[in-house]
Figure 1 (cartoon, one colour):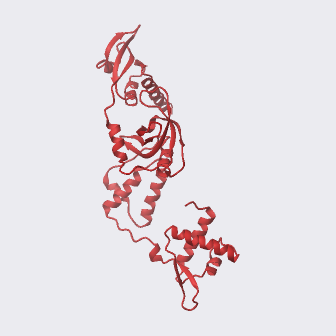
Figure 2: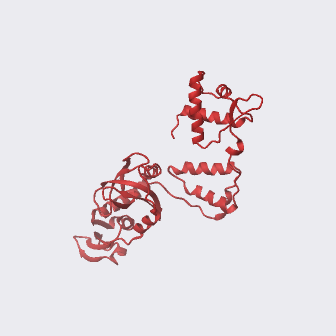
Figure 3: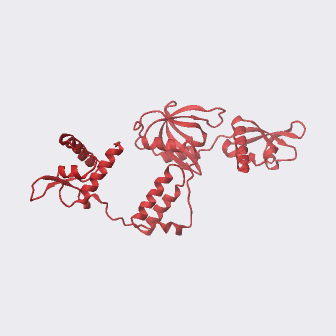
Length: 321
């Protein structure tokens, strides 16, 4: 239920007013006490009726009654029905809550996690127990696609994005109903239903090119009953990748670590040899190849070559900084 700022302030003032009184307040007393209500009787009556209904929809326990001396109908909110019960947590439970809040350090979840931790402390709950655990967890959400996908999962709307799959030299447009975002071994994945391929798919966020666009109305995506998103993601991620072949040039007398397991090594002009290497994933193999610097040149496949170039550019940018 979306509320305007003016209505939100009026409802908040109404709740505060009805919580603060021990007596039943009549509609006229409420009109005079709560800012934001019109002076006109009919206009006030319609607005007040709508406000009462919205408070009930929000779960606010609005009590209707009357004082004996006046007999007039009035309203109040019993504090004992409105307030949450006192929270009692064991040291282990507070440690887990504090630890969970400290996991999220970046992106859209950092503010929410910090706010939750602050509320725990405001309620008198000491979350410093996490210090005794001796670990400092962190879930890094630097992936540019993460905020948009997180919102899409939360709001239940389809998305569209350009995705460069394994072995692909160019990105292709994908249309997906997002079910969840999963982290595994430092990498982020989207699990959802690919409407173009009519099948469940797992997408690595680092392979999403450009911006993620909304592709349908909120609330139009629901996770099918019985679907285990984590199980789907982990089964796809952990499945053995198909072995692939790469052709590289090696500087003569250098890159001995690669030469030990390279095949079909042949001279290729003055000072260079050509060799074939076996690998599974370009993004995992590229950092290893980049360690050899100018002693290795990837000729094929294109996605491995691009990944190595990107790795070297990242190292260079970090050195410049």
